[in-house]
Length: 188
Image 1 (cartoon, helix red, strand yellow):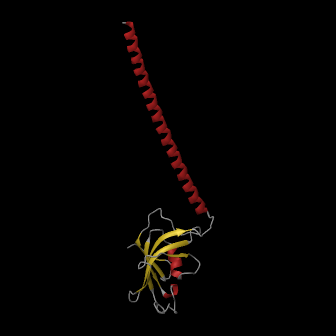
Image 2: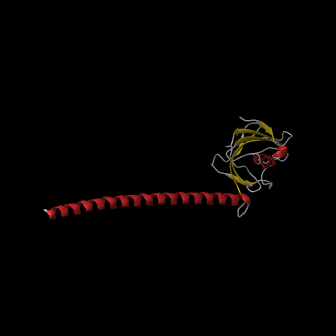
């Protein structure tokens, strides 16, 4: 397991990296606020699983910073990259507080989540810079593929032209030999 990091500064949200993301992996940003996660949540007190996406292999999606998830998730997911798996320990103040979330989560419960950040996406219909950059990158790749295909086509045409020229030379030599043969026959 990786380093233990106090993300909230008061011990309320502790993150331990279980699996690092690749160095070039993307992270949530203002341009990519929608996140897709796999997770399993357990009660710290007894290790009892209260929620999981692993059972039915679903993805949980939400937008960071909108208050649709517990505070700990808004804090922790911002620090993750796609492909990363982390253990997030959430004190009650960063989870469901004194109310809990009956019947599965009692009042004042500390929760432990194993979370995998699967993807970061832009909002639907957004025309943000990262979307434009990705489109431009894909266009450039398409252009490079087209140039490579054109170069291969040009090489193929050159080979065909060379074959045709060689065949024409051979045919011309054969015709010349035939012509010589006829000329010799007539001279006798």
